[in-house]
Amino acid sequence: MSIIHRTEVKPTKLELLTEWLPAQPWYEGSGAPQLTRSGGFRLDDPAGEVGMEFMVVTDASGARPVAYHVPMAYRGAPLPDAPEAALIGTVEHGVLGRRWVYDGARDPLVRTQLAALLKGEVPAHSQSVDGALDPTVHARLDPGAPASPEIVRVLEPGGATPGTVGEVSAEWRRPDESVVRGTFVVVRAAQGR
Image (cartoon, rainbow, N blue to C red):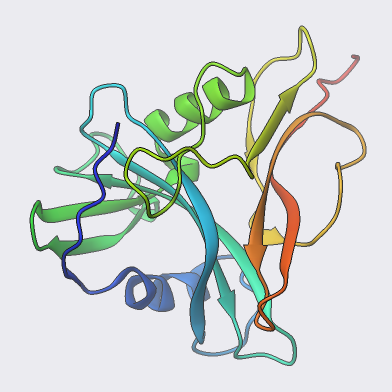
């Protein structure tokens, strides 16, 4: 079980993402993001070394608020052979020291644990409560389908995504404090299936 430390992190996760998000091809804004945390969940590293968070941040800088899904891996050392673009940045953690924060979509451990979640082999944990599971996270994978997760970056409220053989859905808060559910991860049917 991952431990959630109540300590200072510099820069904060939101400060780190404010710098990183505008450089992403799926960013819909046109300037500096105005971010708030809106939801998310965690997965555990079986070895207890890597933090894995699936964070939702809402950007209020544009004409309408946009909810982004940013999976992140927090590592105690650089990820070997990772492309430079996979690194979101580094932070100083009040308990753990320097942490390298990677885009979870490009981190092999995050992808492995996400596939395990889709198969029902591991549970989703609360984003901010030690040891608590998150019952609002739902995962499904059709029998016989490969667990090849694709991260949904821009979240929209709604049900199952047509043409998929698996998905992870969860909840997040809108700026008006209403709670909505949408798809965070999809698994598409293989060609010829």
